[in-house]
Length: 250
Image 1 (cartoon, helix red, strand yellow):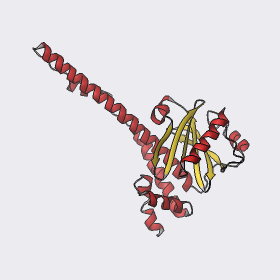
Image 2 (cartoon, helix red, strand yellow):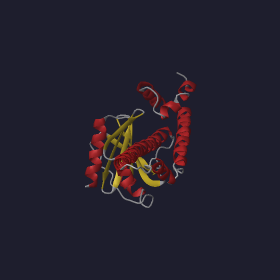
Image 3 (cartoon, rainbow, N blue to C red):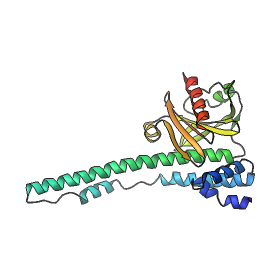
Image 4 (cartoon, rainbow, N blue to C red):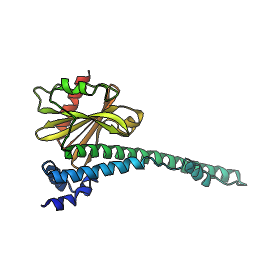
């Protein structure tokens, strides 16, 4: 398959619309082809910019009042009829609010997961994946001091199948965080670390989130920090690396 044919699939790849087999084939190609990697990085950054721009606009706060006013019961001469109308209206408002809350949470989760996946894909496609290149955790951890508003521990990997490549500063919703890059049997794992917040906890929670593109994504909180692993490696590798981070933080 030519690069032109593969580049026509990049948008579908970024939007998780490719069949899993095609996504894996394209993912492997992106690791070896600078031209296709550059195209993927450009389109991923454009997609992320659109996501960020979209957050600047929100529905008018008067909209809810208008909806509630439109379903408010009219005066009725009959007492029980009025009560039924009020109950129906209240039930409709409650369903509207609950539905909105569920939709907003799902939408927020999908948006955050989409942004994080884009960051991981952009890292894979970049010629310079990390800003500090080192397999020594005692070199990588101090590099982040003064660059992110928190400290974290990098796990000991001696005797494990994992190798630390390095790290760089990244951003989620304009909040600075750390991205650490690891490899395990030719698979690349991005570990994102941000200060935890009620918004992140509510949207992401803990445990396996989704399988997006050909990636597995897992999130957990520890010591006031939010950790996320994104990789095409298997669940056992994710669980192993997560346990090592938890142990490092103890």
